[in-house]
Image (cartoon, rainbow, N blue to C red; front, side, top):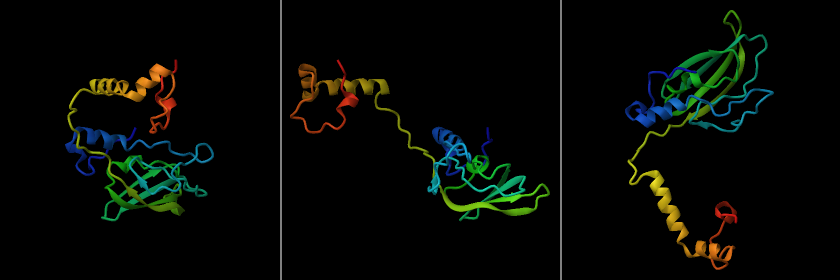
Amino acid sequence: MFRICSAQVNNHSTKKFGAIALKESVVPIHPGVPGKTPFWNMHVHQFIYAPAFNYKIIDKATRYLYKIVSTDGFSKTFESNVPYAPLSPVWASVPVGYFNLVVTGLSDKGDTLGVAGSGKYYRAATFNGPYYEPVIAYDKSAATALDNLLKKDYVEYWFKHKEPDPSYVNYRYPSKFMVHW
């Protein structure tokens, strides 16, 4: 797995769950692989989790240089052996905001062979609170909600008549919460 950079984005290190969210954001969600797995984010420009892009393979390139430059002057690079690698190695240190990405194919001697791809994207913030203490325990909250639901007239009608109450007009997806007898 990738090591999280020491530079934290938006004070995530100050809140326990914020630090967890930042650490989780370096793991890409369903990254594509050309010819095997489609890239789900072809038309997306804003990311919380480390993205990967379907950039082209450069003939005779042995590795690829990824350069990220944000609009506030932040700059970071890393190398990969493919032009479609996730930005995970540097993602935790990329500040919230717009950044430009350029992926360049390099020869085994380090010569630039061409641009595999580039784009302007937005690094969205991970959630960092506020995290409030629950008023009651989650299991007790769920039990209370279900108890109150079961006391509703339209639910009691269902139990008694084995069908939805025809006078209740707010049903949307009754099969999702109806108990089948």
